Image (cartoon, rainbow over all chains, first blue to last red; front, side, top):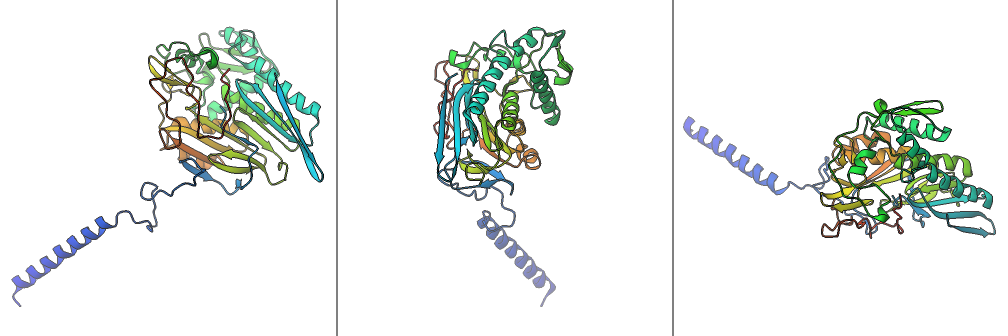
Length: 75
Length: 319
């Protein structure tokens, strides 16, 4: 095969794979299974009774399914 | 002050006593397991007396007399000394974000009297307050405020009093002073005191919790929306993108301190601060679904802090 043909084929393959990769990446930006999972990508829906926001509890804080006796919302 | 007593006694269950009353300009709620009525009465009286001593709206309160004596040394009680030291500690621990010296800024924003009476017209902010340690000096039995400065103990007093009262009231009790609370012991079922925060029920045991919100104690003036959370960098009501921050911590005072700091810092920096310093936190954004929206067309001078979403009862704004 002529060297020019090999060069052209290589270039075509490279450009082709680049285009395919770009198409694939653009089609899969919001990958919910990605190990790094920013909140803006796929924000988990909150339970109906929970206001939206970001709740972060350490293991030393327990939660329960009992009727609360009071609330922090007053001041 | 009127107080409601509820005592539940059942076979095999410890008795739970409860009081609800108004003090410190807000709703107070005290619960205790196996506490005598005299003890519960003492708790109500203690907080009511603290209100009279530490309110800035009564010219004869101990705090008002300290503010009026700015420029010279002034004799103070043991409790006020402890509160002032707590204010200085809060300032240091939060690098100045919790600043008791923002009273001139609150007055400039129109918060000159209990909000149930309506705010005053806002005028130009006085600028950022000086660092608290340069305006407040505390020695045993006396304190000195720099001339031209004044302090408001606000949430610091609520958190500090909740911790103090819980330590005195009973081994198993919960003291909630306007949302700044401390839960001591395991509660009625020894599973932890069930407390509503951020839409979930927490079971708190020897832990404090608080919510800081710019949605309450807010009002409209000719200069726009005003609220009581002053940004000490500007001397103006905070423009944080957070509307509410709730915190669980080792004490009510800690929870109050970090909740306020988190709100003032905003959503970007608050998590970085709160993760290492609290036991848990919740951030609520401005204008987020579920959070109350303020009505800019509402006439100035009317309180606009009613929050239909949150599980709260009527809030008194007398302080």
